[in-house]
Image 1 (cartoon, one colour):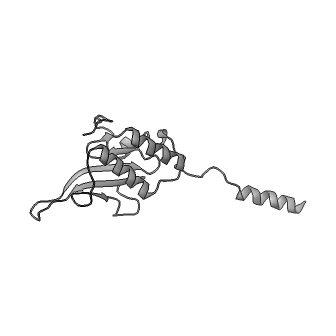
Image 2: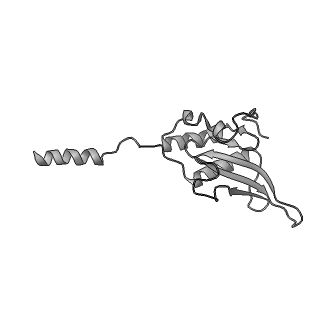
Image 3: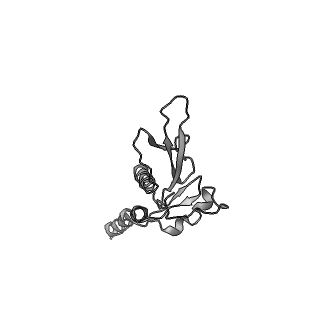
Length: 151
């Protein structure tokens, strides 16, 4: 009887249960989302002229906590001209929901929808989990740029 009780307790602790918190997508997954959005924006990231960089390097929490942040830089061919930031993408670590930070533009297109669905299957999140993303990234009072239309 004692062994049965011990076995029941062990089984309760070792059996899978619902996650205590929502998991996050990996950096590489978020980077693929940012590259898909860049393609949608008709920007060819080639690691020479247009470069995708993480903006999450200054502290462990990242540029905006809870989100991966990427910038696309057009690198200058001349030391006399400065590099130019073309886009700043913010990608949710839970849903892969994506916004352009400076334009306050939300993205939605079929390829991205598939990436987001895969991310949410992995993390257990839902679109409702990011209902406050607009405000969290500083776009709460801005008029949203048209989503689904390349700029």
